[in-house]
Length: 342
Image (cartoon, rainbow, N blue to C red; front, side, top):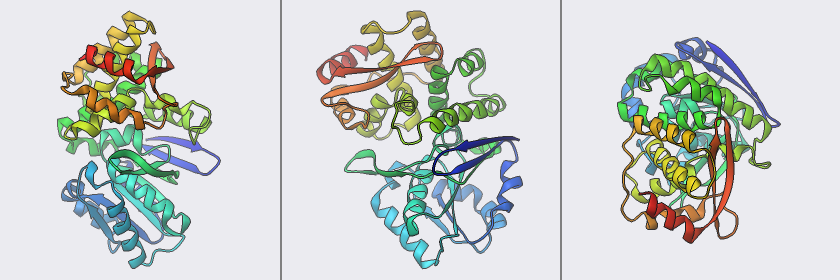
């Protein structure tokens, strides 16, 4: 098992990563516990939760991004109060990114902050969203508009959970892994010539992605100096596509967003063509990039991205192996190039 430590001004997060991490670490979570999960995860792991967290209340939200809202956040806080949680209680987020986001926000708000343990069960949440302390719900049809920075005290990444995932969930997580490959030369080299859907291989890559994120977050926990912006590579357009087309998963939209933004960067004369082509081939191993109709309507959602400066759209794009750049582009030009790209 790999042990990784994230040190920030607000907290020290211990990250346990590997096959069997759950059985090794879950029993060590002491005190009063409150578990938050979703319908899909609970259907598979209800017995496991009962075995390890018997007598602890379990709050189950409906699976899917639509559940990440203020209404459910209020219901969770109400259930936490009914359970009479105290400042030394622990909220356990057991599930994917949606569960981790809303559970983390609830933990940050209840009594101004209670202990939080993230136990991610999807590839995407294991490789990315469970680490780093970003918590949020969607609001006014804008992704992650209401949230906080709140570091988990502990993250338990058991790669054994990947065995129960459908292929689409693996594809979704690969969106974030390819993002890390574009940011980290070693990860890029590791995944370029391997079977991206092989679970054993994916388990070997997860710690490297986590370590990259830990390095970034430790230097820029709250997105203040620009380092953490790099983790949004592909996400400006990806979030816009996700919000407009709804039925597409986050990871698939990030891959499509990255694909379109590579085209934009190349048109603007940024980056190396050979490298861009290799990234495109990686993306095409995972998804067949759709030719989105009404992409100009989807682009309107990009205006609300938190990275934007004034009327321009801000994009994080790769330049060469292990290096990326931040570019600002006029919205009309952004829309024009998106329409070209499709």
